[in-house]
Image 1 (tube, rainbow, N blue to C red):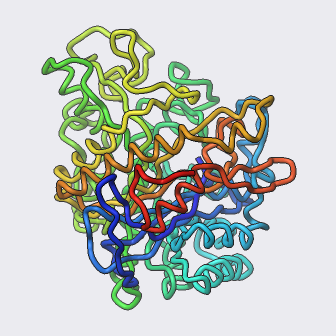
Image 2: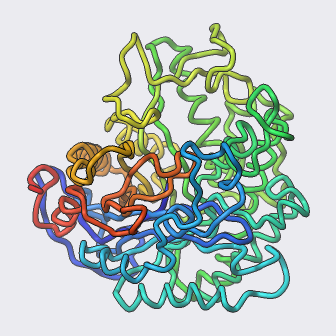
Length: 527
């Protein structure tokens, strides 16, 4: 998906509409938003949005933001999207929605709505052309300086991601990218350059965006770069789906830890910022009340979400993974334990939908289904139970509307990770970009408004019960290039004409503007 913009807003349920006072740099109430991008050595990054902090953590008023992805909205990017057959509609991200050239116009739109924090990605290769120790590209440094300064001048807080599905191609060519431990030192060096040049103005850092998706789709199914997999898992020219996802994940975890260590030892004390990681988070309901299916739902979380968060927070992999995988999991050496434990200040959560989990460890499952293999955790992922979907179906095949999953996901993380501060860094509703549809059909997006209302109310419920959620980010500010789906799905609050690049507010943008103005409740906004 792409990135977006955020703004300060008090999240309100239907029974609350209290106004809050802003006090800058309180991480408990920062409003954030984000955008995504995939990029190699020629890629540019897109921008995302967020909102500034408030003076206290009010359960009725978490911060609200908007996300946008670099490649998805900036354009002028990568090799993989130019390979025939990779993208559903045969398109590429050469232009996307050209946020790179139109960012000042887009900042005006954000300011109009009320956004006061903007989350964007920095291109690793734009800062370090070789991806490692060597000359810093001053032109690249100045590019992000201009963006950050423009944000600060408008009173918009930068919220910066260091890598979002992107890796310098040179590192992939030289030593295999995330498959080599060498990347840990190179990533830490790149991070230190960013902290040095931008940390005086950037107070919120994300090391990696959705590393669990990178590990699974890049090294197991092979549908994302670097497109590595075994023949039984996908159509790749090389790779090992049984081992490489765990090697890549291990190096991503240790790269995160190395960057956090650099930030905490050299920069955090004087720059007064915070640093975290963003995870793709899917809620799993057991398909039945049986003990086996309940354990399968737990394995589903451990083999996707806790796979990364347990080592970063507790210093080791989840028990469910160690019991099943044994020696397939790499070891953490003693010298890395200290850096790993409590290795973040916040958890970013990208949550859209939920699934059922069915046990495949003690029961028979059809081979080849999602999740059923040993290295995936021996569970079947499905959205259907007794011929009924888990929630209202949408035109996007993987997205069913199940707002209960938002509250349950946040509550689960609250209990497992000692209520570490959380941000909802992506949440949104997509529609199919039908070629014959009129623009009015896209602008009257009542279903998106209903989705946002229901998920925000579920989030408020979790916060009222004690979850330390400090911000919400809607996906996405603009329609954009949606990775493998190309331009076939629209997630934006603003409609983009992909020929003229004209931006037009949808009903959801008007609703969101009223909502974040603190003038109304979730249910009371008219558009």
